[in-house]
Length: 425
Image (cartoon, rainbow, N blue to C red; front, side):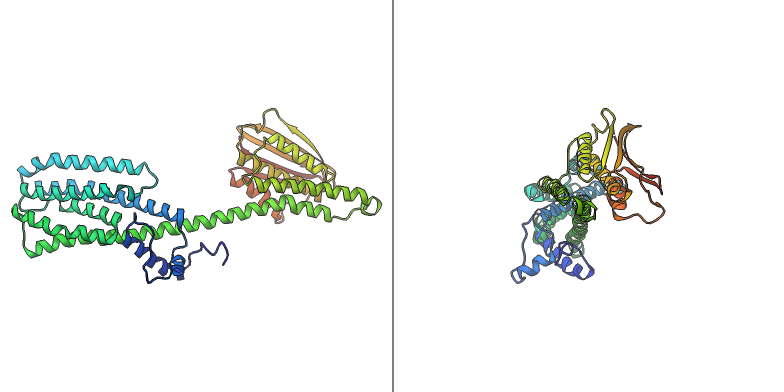
């Protein structure tokens, strides 16, 4: 199995992933990773390819979504419940319950503000607060029945607390929270609330529905976040692969091609040619070693980087004249500088291989808040109407486009080529 296929999610894998997410949801978001004793470890690992730190991030992101959903539901349901009392003509109850409702609204809105400022939330750290929230919700629901004996005005609010318990403690915790409604309803009946079988079952069913919806939401959110992370991992690996291909093309491959070119000096001055080959090999070995030691790329200033390129190309027989304006490129960040240097290296490499001329000019200046670097030669040129090769397409045009820059390649047969690179300064 390749690295890419390890994170690719096809249709055949979705049922297995769904089953794994169902068991994950049954254990609760905050619960540590587990698998049923009857499930082989290798099979369980195959169902959930994203684990470890990535799995913890997924759980915390799902926790954040669950918290925001439950809190927003309670903020919406409280005014509705109070409004229904007004519509039914309860004159005393709204005045008594209004301060309590306002306090609950303020607490839930404050909690939404706190959670929304965080990218992830760990429910394991707030399990105690979730239990306190459930106890407060049950207590207020029972107390409200003493004010409004014929209705459970805060029962929908209680459903939000059951949602949080289900998320923090899993399916078992949610079921236990629902079972607590039995003694709560008996206490409410003592204050005069309806206690017939239909009402009892309906209230329990309301809380049970909250548990089921929470469980389903955990599965859906978990699957969505899992697929998104899998796609991100795959895209990141593909981007890294392209970066390495460009690096190899711009350095090692060009050097090997230059070494392989036949020259009349191979017969007339073999010792000099061998010395040149060794010098080129030393330069490329040093560059490859720096690449392996510093994967982030070259962070040298632009002028120094261009000077290194000129020195490198001089070893391949190309004389490069540099014209760098004072301060040009001194303020650009590493990614911009690396893209420009990579594009210049590719353009000069093309001059050395194809232009049939021994010199080129590189000019760097800043124009209208942009760094402009021009590579110009007066060689044989080529027809730009044809399909560009990998070097121009990927190492110049695509490289500049990825950092928000632009590359223009102009060429005239018999009159040379001009490559213009532009990035924000």
